[in-house]
Length: 393
Ligand SMILES: [Zn+2]
Image 1 (cartoon, rainbow, N blue to C red):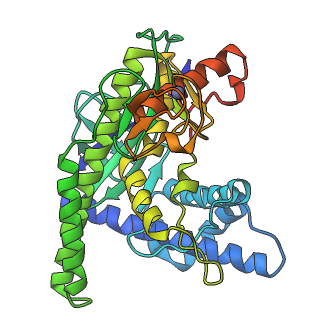
Image 2 (tube, rainbow, N blue to C red):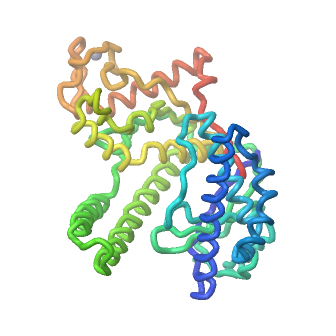
């Protein structure tokens, strides 16, 4: 079995090299915006959108007019054009927004695909035109290095190494089957066993973020104090994000190590978190309530957890099945009676037909597992299987 695995490391850059990277991401942004403007102009003129090859062919001309564009490695600029074309493709096929112009601080990354050397014993990576750079080498990246992406992540530079790995067809370690409910009252509720909760420290960070945000609005625009406050806020954000990601990694790894089948709800997180504010003519319903729920969902990172389960499951031979989400919270796990009245409060489930009592998320998790097992038995699960290999660039 072959798959791609990403490894993320913080870079330990000398100021001189950091300055170079800063200049290069500026060049990247300029190339992106220039190419996008060119594509838009061609589209408006009715000549069709210029392709990746056509955009690449313009690079030498641009470099002649703007000599500083020759500074960054040419491959990084070509990858930018590739990203732009992929953004258009995504817009056409999956309804994502059309590519936009990038402002300073947006999408500042550089991808290198050639001339890379990964020095594992030395904990270094050689990047084109930059030479060897030391990393906070927390673990050895296994496999064959395919590409490296350097970006600034809230105040520090990181590199993501994408490795191609070949392993034997894996067999699951665990044997049990579990249903998972990504709940509102609890973070992850399994159909059996203890609930998995977000670390309490996270809410501390969230309170601090709120306070820092309020402080930021009181600072004069363009002032030094405002800039400092923005840095503090960004650092706090970074910590909260890292904490959540770490929690999800540990939780999902433990889950795939202990089970052979994991059933989850096929939630459309993007749909669920879409703003409910509506438009001027048609204001949305329950705006305030939904806003609160949106925050909770995003906070708990359902989408991220699901992606982790998918790829980790695929690598360990664990079957991850997503089932229809409708009514899992209103159905009784004991007698299958579906009734809105079964949910008296947000966290308590009490069946009006048979009197079955349970924690609401636990009851839902049991339903999710039962649905997955039923779909496997009836052989209808093929379109619900979510084990997709990670696509390489
Ligand atoms: Zn019942």
